[in-house]
Image 1 (tube, rainbow, N blue to C red):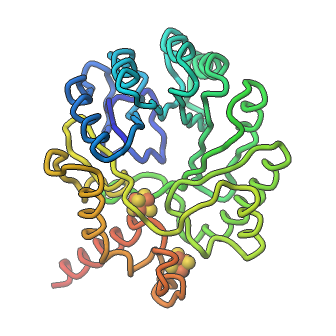
Image 2 (cartoon, helix red, strand yellow):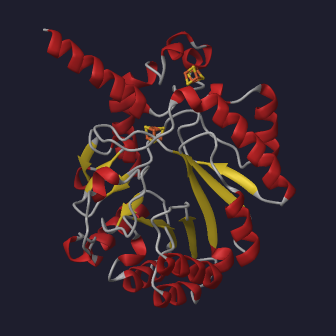
Length: 326
Ligand code: SF4
Ligand code: SF4
């Protein structure tokens, strides 16, 4: 379960998957942060679920005013802390995290190129990467087949970062207007990902994937490349589970506005997962494009037709059209 410990962020990425939850917060004073008491209750929940990993995201989790206390409480209870960060953290936060044991703390850093980043923001990222070194794995969000990744390889080599790159596919957020990878570009993106995997293998770097991939992105030859050069991937949607400072939990960010539940209604993770699986089951037979309806992989349950946000959006559009025509 990912915990949105603050809804404040210093960036405004066009693909932002958390957009529905962080809104357009301009000022840290208007941000909402998860409290230490809330986090204690969440750690109880995670322990009941057999999970000893505290996954902190936002917004930008390093901007939570009590980050040090959160980390110390988590360590005291034997949790591993994993941060999802843009690495634009103040130097004193980077120094604090750098001094913590590597076996108890890790970061997934999305340092996507952004022309609006100021020199000061870039300096902060470089400072944090240099301080944190092998605790950091880099991630990238793919919005088109001609994405760049070479700068990530350079950063890994320059700062001695973990030799892994995590790849997320930008997905639509139901009910919102964000940048995402269109299914018409999946095949070209699959080719580019396989080429990236081979180039990274030459540098002794493995790639890994978030959810939302599809079987038809790759040829047989590209599947073989990924089997050798990646950590593996899934083409079947399973709930991610995220939780916000208002203690509402949701299936995953793309569905965050449409599949919300009160955290307190569930005893543990399995109960919440089962409920979300029941609620999303009908959408797993639609797919993300017309071809899915005739696809053998969908019929066999090997592919759920990409991210369910596509199916939900087209269902909503059809519903709206039917309503306006009636
Ligand atoms: S179900 Fe749809 S997305 Fe999945 S492999 Fe088939 S055509 Fe592609
Ligand atoms: S709907 Fe499924 S595939 Fe899409 S982001 Fe959520 S969990 Fe991943």
